[in-house]
Length: 162
Image (cartoon, rainbow, N blue to C red; front, side, top):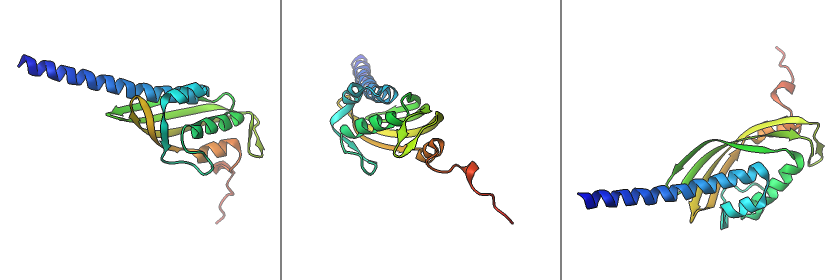
């Protein structure tokens, strides 16, 4: 009985350690989005990182998020990202991120006027060897583009007439 309990405790401790590494990878990647520090992305992402929801024009692999962050920080230099919810299960992490800042830079041909930016994103990671190997993500780009003035918002839609 004691041997069985000891074995169970060791297995649980090992699983907790693996979950700690998995959570650390997710937190390190969120810190990258919060700061823009490429070293954090390189620490969080596997060298074989795959973006499973790769946007058009973005490079696959570690360079993709680096490129995206640099471009986004050109538009929103004070960008902040906060984890508002995280669930770790085995080698998977679900993360809900809250992005805030001010559009004071440029996005394509559009120049910011200090508009507040406040949108959310959801990511699902698969972690291997303490680093994110795969990512599936969904951002609220409609809200972001409306806040930047790139797309009309619901308030600017023409009134319906009867």
